[in-house]
Length: 220
Image (tube, helix red, strand yellow):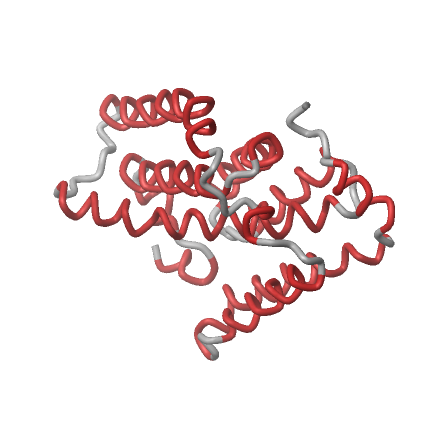
């Protein structure tokens, strides 16, 4: 199966879903942006409401956690197929940081703790990108367009951090292709966490702005 080939169920949903169905993911994206830019400061708990809306959407469509990608049965296969590429990318990032002398000075225990904390966040972000947005766009758009739309929203969520936007657009699209091929959010979350941590480790704050997005970007 081609990485961008929709499953039979996705094709059926796409054929039956009216064009107006695209308003659902776009509305959720607007809520997420409102939370990033304003609501998290005045109404921090609103994120639970946004997540609840997404969960209700899954329940309405009878989407189970395993079908969304929360599965371990093919994790070993994902690792065997994509871990070598992830390892090469990680080594290239580390080598670049060493050669350019931009590697952040951080004690190993603190670095390991930071990576460990970032992995669950990586899984959650991949769920939002693929488990929710990609699956919703698949209902109304061709496979490649749906992948790009999901990646574009993922990139847009990192405004105004131009560096993260440039990074997340192609990586988000690649994540969508891998998701179509293996449909495993755990592997994608691990990859997300490793790459995100390495960006923090080797990219200076003068470029990455400490990986902050939203209003916090202006403080770095």
